[in-house]
Amino acid sequence: MIEYLFIPFAYLLGSISNAIIVCKVMGLPDPRSEGSNNPGATNVLRIGGKKAAALTLFGDMLKGVIPVLLAQLAGVGTGVLAATAMAAFLGHLYPVFFGFKGGKGVATALGVQFGLAWQIGGSVALIWLFVAKVLNISSLAALVSMALAPLIVWYFQPVPELIAAQILISIMLFWRHRSNIRNLLSGSEGKISG
Image 1 (cartoon, one colour):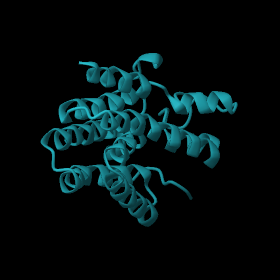
Image 2 (cartoon, one colour; image 1 turned 90 degrees about the vertical axis):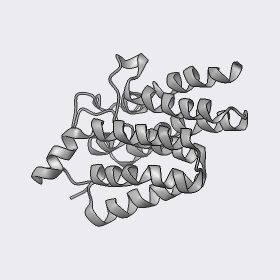
Image 3 (cartoon, helix red, strand yellow; image 1 turned 60 degrees about the vertical axis):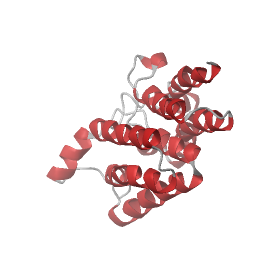
Image 4 (cartoon, helix red, strand yellow; image 1 turned 30 degrees about the vertical axis):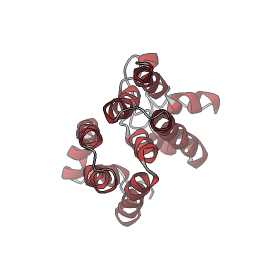
């Protein structure tokens, strides 16, 4: 029964907004009211530079890695593991500490994937880096890598609950990126640099 405690723990950890905290500590504008108004690493990069963005990215990934990895080490069932992964991601999207208004979830989803297996996280990260390098658009890199993520989970960990959790994460991530998708279709989506 104690294994179910990983689920609320993951949600509460996911609810910590590293973008807001990093910007506050570094004396930068609130990412919820600057740039894209999104409390995520890409927006922090735009308003605060590489160091602030790197700290945000690392912190947001840890929110996914820590609860999933701890749950695995504790030997929880696959259903609880999948729910823990989902809870960390939902915490980032709908943080209880910040009025349920969070980021788009890319870094936390990647952290969840690394928590499941380094091969999963590494594969998704490589796809993101390749698309970002070639096309210079962060949102497109996120959408492509997360669209392929369920197949990657299926390949490395063919467990129905984990595949289902990743499908739900990918669907929600696409939903959170709906404005980016509109911009991509109209050719107005911003570049990572230049």
